[in-house]
Image (tube, rainbow, N blue to C red; front, top):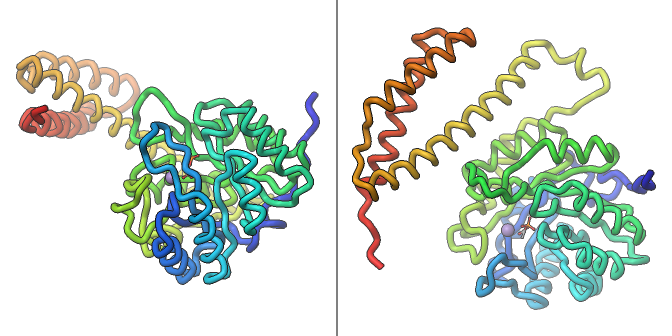
Length: 367
Ligand code: PEP
Ligand code: MN
């Protein structure tokens, strides 16, 4: 039996004991002006408790922007001075840790590409021996709970007790609507295995597109996560990394204000009326249905491309008849009315045809 982790709950060490704790800032520190202006705007919203910025960027492919290094770290420290907000950044080796500790970074995090590698995690843990600094551990890129727990254990063995996990989703071969599949079960399993460990959700890296962020952020809170890390940039579309998933400080504030914070209490079940329990179940199912529709449309796109390349017509009557026949029969067997199934399928089919038509009519890019 493994020794349990020695942990201090996040509300005893987070700079401001807020629930949820909101960490925000750009994916990367790019220029002094971008860091300071973003930080000031975020601080002015009153909705942000910790500033983040990536200084050393672990990029999947070489040749992309790899971070500003020490120069950027100084801007982050400057942002801390000007806003009064504590700051956080990613560390991937001992030199990063030393630089952060020397300059006064308040919270460190281990990125998803480091958590997968016990050598990297051990190097970070060794550099942190005897240091009292909070560390957040992102889940590994791949859905491996043991690696995630292993990284937390390595840091804990080095004496780090101000520990929390960050759920940022998992890489998956199947491309769904998200950049990184949330696989909520894994985060829930982590909480079940280590109940005293706080988990912060990172909707930005789960979603990959800014439009989805409010839904994932709300879902994380509904699962009782302790906080959120959301990327924010003064000019998201011009960001040097993760442009599609960043939001302006004003949008960040809107997202945070729109969140419903439900505080669980021991007698929560009695307090909740059954209507709200049912509604939560409906929310959960609708969430899954929308994801399935999105996945289905992605396949329609692929079919459109295939039909285009092979000069096949979009509408194939036999296939459509077969869909109606089998699905309506299945629906009836499960207690859905025939009319409902037909109408719903008709809508889905129309949308699918539109998606395919768009692909068919798209001019091929000449190379
Ligand atoms: C980031 O936070 O910008 C980052 C690189 O995240 P992750 O390690 O989750 O990919
Ligand atoms: Mn990022």
